[in-house]
Amino acid sequence: MILVLRVENLYVSISNIEILREVSLKTEQREVVGLVGRNGAGKTTTFKTVMGFYKPQRGRIYLDDVDITTTPTHLRARMGLSYVPEDARVFPWLTAKENIELAIYLSGNQDRADDIWDRVLGVFPELRNFMNRLGYHLSGGEKKMVAIARALATTPKYLLLDEAFEGLAPVVVKRFRDVVKTISQDLGIGIIVAESNINIATMIADRIYVIERGEIIFEGGSDEVSRNENVMKIIRGG
Image (cartoon, rainbow, N blue to C red; front, side, top):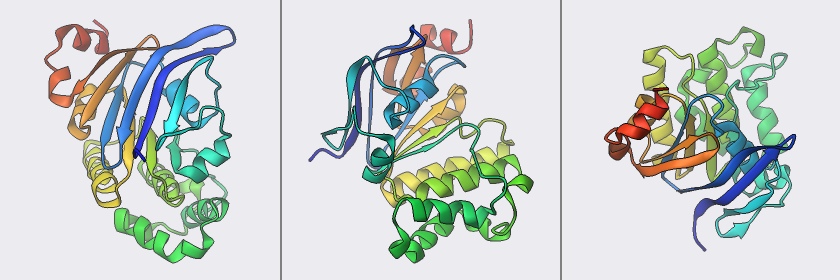
């Protein structure tokens, strides 16, 4: 079995408007891949299609060589896919701890709860400082921390992070960059990071895909993209 999350030639339309055209990308376990593009380029639509929120008109999605193109979202999650949206979606009326416990319960991992908490706190020891704080009262960085921890509580094989660094202070960006590396290397999880900031993407990703107007216009190493003047001009809105 090939341990890879693979998307092949996705075409997606929403309200009869074509959003994605021939999008192909992949990530292996222990690999961090950047999906870079301006706002509205198609990053979030790609992620939501991979998760099953949108149905592609054409194309296939494979998880470890299993075709999941028509698999319901909740089963994709059980099979090892997890998604952290840009706005974190932390439940405001639950504490940080309860947000994570809910993920453990809904993913059917109650019998592994102790091991999951060891894993989560190994990645985010800071959680101990605000475990009992309601979501209402969490800062932006704390909400993203809880959202990623909640995703890890489902014991994923692959993690989709949508604009995880958006709006964070530089010192917090550095911390989250280290977290992504830890999740990838120590936990063996394949990660795709959707990012509008090319500088951040190249700091954390092994490979880069650039998406523009719903199409992949570049695929290559993180060191290659910065040398491509045409791609860099597009990313920066030139």
